[in-house]
Amino acid sequence: MTLLVVDIADMQISNNPGDTLITYSLGSCLGVTIYDPVLRLGGMIHCMLPSSKVDKEKAKLRPSMFVDTGLQLMLSRLYESGLRKSRAVVNVAGGAQVLDSQGVFKIGERNFTVLRKVLWKNGLLMQTQEIGGNKSRTISLAIANGRFSIKSGGKLVHYDVP
Amino acid sequence: MTYLKQIEDHIDRFPEMPPLSQQLLGYLHDPQVDFTIIKELVQYDPGLTANILKLANSVHFGAAGKVSSLQTALARLGTEKILELVLSLTVSSRLKVSLPGYGLQAKDLLRHSIWTAVAAQELANLLNMKQVEMIFTVGLLHDLGLLLLDPFIQTERLRFNQAVDAPEASFEQIEQDILGLDHARAGGMILAKWQLTPEIVAGVQGHHQPEQSTQYQDLIFLIHLADMLSLSEGIGTGEYGLQHNVSPHTVKAVGLKKKHLEYVASKTLDKMQELEKILS
Ligand SMILES: [Fe+2]
Ligand SMILES: [Fe+2]
Image (tube, rainbow over all chains, first blue to last red; front, side):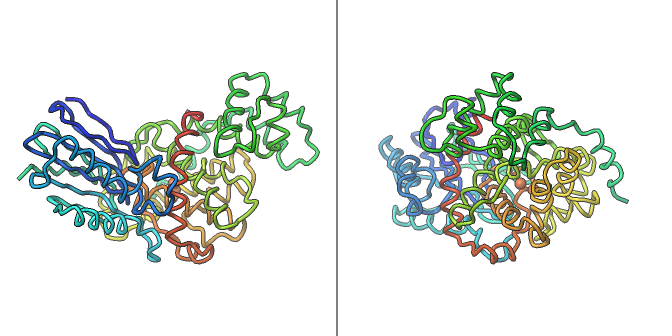
């Protein structure tokens, strides 16, 4: 098994059954995986910020930094590789936050709002969503069977393709 | 019973500050200091000289045009900046260790520290807070106290894990309750022992309780907010990193808005990655 690490503000796609995509330490960032069980094709992205509007230059260089541009890019790449919407299994985790009574650090919440918009526009539903709280999360996706795992606070939970 | 006494003993055995930084520190805040003195101190270490030039030319520190000699770097950036660079280079090696108590892998703390240092400067620029001195150094050093407390957290793992499960429990308070002091104060104690300048000590010591500071407030506010942003973005968060309180007073005092944070976060990542290569 090969671990393919998805860095912050980055994305990876694989159809090699030997690969597992993994991304570490999601705080308010969102980790999103999309998987096609028939093709055994999967993608993972680690987005930091909700909207590319905050820095359009940066969005050109690093589309995966933002939920809006990043998710759209990952979807196009997956469609190019044959993903069918009807089979797509979408999993989402992250969106945690520090203890902030003023609400300025609610980056996670805004990330999730934008994510839902993009999914809705694309007619996609979420299979798993583990959002919020104040613990960081590490997620992985096994390309062989689409198993999605979330590790947080010493606990590991698996979600298999339905 | 807490560990305060034991922790204080550990501070006495904590490694000294690198000698070169110590010497350079003596010249800081000395308006009379001649560039040639600093040049002489630094130039016999070719690796250091090369790295100073790399830092001086990085996107974060770089002024217009490349500098290719120590002389120009010194003239361009001034004594204080050069001292910051040297301190950064010598201290950064200490930040590469893994800290199992906090759940941090090797380099996580270094990355978190660089991110905080860069973001604090970006935030200062954005909010028009000019001339905040030593901001990079304080950003880099702000969590030095983790090195001191990590073994005690390992010993008290069970109590820590129980305490963090309480909703809204802040980690600095849990450290205070279980160990008798938090890592910010621990860091301040190390730096005071190293005889670093008062603003550096205050900046590190106050980074989780910025509202209690009376001096160097701009510096402490910026470091606090940059630190919270760094943790938010998952940079060196470890097991407990998101369980820290953002100071409402500080948010109001600097007029912080969501858009500021998002803009700073987008700018910081690339600069952090460039500096990480130089500093590791
Ligand atoms: Fe801290
Ligand atoms: Fe920190």
